Structure formats: structure tokens, C-alpha cells
Amino acid sequence: MRIDVVSIFPEYLEALNISLLGKAQDSGLLEINVHDLRDHTFDRHKTVDDTPYGGGAGMVMKPEPWALTLEGILEQSPVERPVLIVPTPSGEVFSQPGAYELAESEHLIFACGRYEGIDERMFHWARERFDVRLMSLGDYVLNGGEVAALAMIEAIGRLVPGVVGNPESLVEESHSDDGLLEYPVYTKPSSWREYEVPEILLSGDHARIAAWRKEQQAERTRTRRPDLWTKHQNMA
Ligand code: 6GU
Image: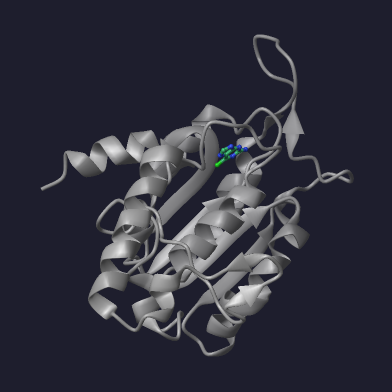
């Protein structure tokens, strides 16, 4: 999979070069390219923003540096119409099913805006060339799209076949098929300070352990995420 990220703070994206995604790039499973939006400005101050027409607080990102940067990326795309993800709190909420869907794409582009947003005409221009997806992490506001892009790229990248060494570890995760949160896990020692590992996990009775874990998942989901619990109860 090829991923391009456009930002005025390319240093934010350096985290993509470590750990699992760093290794996936070394092995060629992922190719991640980060672009500095200011490379496509022409004035001395590398201006990317200006005041909003109609007044109001803050600054708006100018469309031309975006178009020039995205045109350069489009020329290198392995596909006709790549997906352009624009992280924004006013987008559709990014979720695990969405991550699985996007993990099937050959080419993803992330456009990380700052300030009050990007001139709306850039989106009209982009929709003629890309599958534009406005995506939010949830109902809170970050200063820009970079941290959101990092989160989405990690969630998507780990689902690309081969990136996670043991694909079995993807099966029992929170937000996977059954809609329940994960069960609690323990490791050695079985007695730590004044705390014990639940007896049943030491019993070797795999059927009872599986049943106990399901109960724990249900109880956690019911108390922590009543919204997911309701959904789960209405499933199958
Ligand atoms: Cl995707 N972007 C920004 N700036 N803030 C957010 C977000 C995205 N998701 C939640 N808050």
C-alpha cells in the first residue's frame, strides 16, 4: 500500500518511521511519503493561509498549494482515482470497519489541514480527481489533522496483510466482529503484591476459561460502553 501525507508540519509524521509501521516500510509492505505543503508556495514567507472572506476568527488555508501538491502525488499514483482522506472534526467518524475497508486500497492520501480549514473550492476541485473522505476521530477538537492522520494510518496500516506478524492477534480485538470489548489479561507472577490472577485462568480448563472471558467482555462492555452493549444485544 502507498500512503502520502501532506502537512505544514512534516516532523509530526516522523512517528510513522518507528515500530510496526517503520518495519512495514523497511520490508516494502508500506510505502509512506510525507510532503511539506510549503514546498508549493512561491512567496518569501511560504504563505499557506489568509483571512476568511466574510470575516470571522482565524485563518483559512489557500487552495493553490494543496492543488499543486496533490497534482504531484496524483501523477505518481498507482491508481486512477486515489482515496483522499481529510482529517476533520466535521467528518464521518472513523471506525474499525472503516479501517478494514480503507486497508483494501492501494493508495491513500491524507491532507492535514490546520487553522479554520481549507478553502472549500479545494474540495470541489479534489472531488473531480479523488474519492474524498472527510473523517473525524471523535467528538473533540485537535489543532490540526496530523495527530488524527497518525492514528488513522496506524489503525489502517496494521490491517494490511503481513504488517502484523501474527494475524491471529487481530481476531480477538476490541471493535472486531462480536462488538464486545477485550477481556482482561494477566501474566506472571500469579501473585503480585497483594493481587492474584483469577483462579480460573490457572485451572487449565479451556472451556470454562473461554466462558469466563466472554462474561468479562460482556460485563466490561455493558458498564464502559452501554452504546456498544445495546448494539451487541441487537446483533444476530
Ligand atoms: Cl480528524 N481533526 C481535528 N483537527 N480534530 C479532530 C479530529 C480530526 N478528530 C477529532 N478531533
